Image 1 (spheres, rainbow, N blue to C red):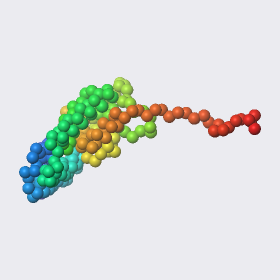
Image 2: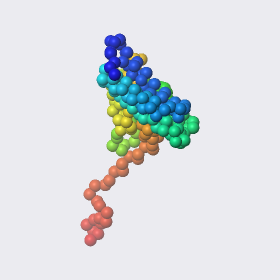
Image 3: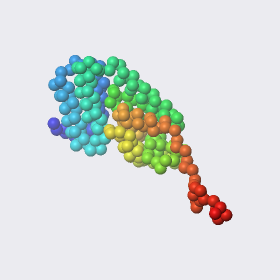
Image 4: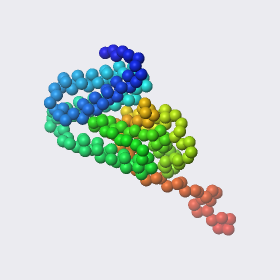
Amino acid sequence: MELVDEGRPGRLEVLAEEAVVAACALADAVSPGGWSAGAVEDVASALEVLAGALARLGPEYAEILAVVPVAAAAVAERAEQARIGTAPRGDASGASATVSVELRRALAAHGIMRHRVHQFGAALLSLTLEPADAQALAALLAPSDGSPRQAPPAEPGWGEGSARTAAAALTEALISYGAGAYARVLDSGHVSAGLPPQAARNVITALTAPAAPPPRGRRRGLGHGYRGIGGR
């Protein structure tokens, strides 16, 4: 399969987003049990080939498209569950809604209020942020040395830098939270983060975990059982 870049600004981005939305919609199909095994294989293969072709044309969209194989695998899994009679009934959508609500609450608890959370099927949760809030979230999620997590203060100039810088920082912070997580800049100037279900849960866990107490200082020079010169 070969795709041709027509040279229109934003065309590849639109195609990449359409591929992701289509993959997630298929993953969230209501009755995959009606599909034949061949149809499931065809769908999964077509999605992966499309994602690969788009990634070759626009390497910068590889992170966005990383969720497509996950969605294709979800399609196959749900079809198999339906075939053997173990498919969940209504649980997936309910669980997705719960994750969205929990993420909103976790962000609000850290003062990150200007955000939009969207659920694309069962395979992807999208979070749209102002650049300043994306930087704040990146700081909250970045690996620390054990000091308490807290959002950076709203100092003058905070978040006024490049939105690409904020997206890059958030992408780097999300790496350790699950495969397929990414962040990018939208045409509107906002930062959009994509979170597969497990990555979203890991982020929520990190944001809601109690802050670690500050390390206690140790007195230097005196160990256990030291009685001083007069104690001999």
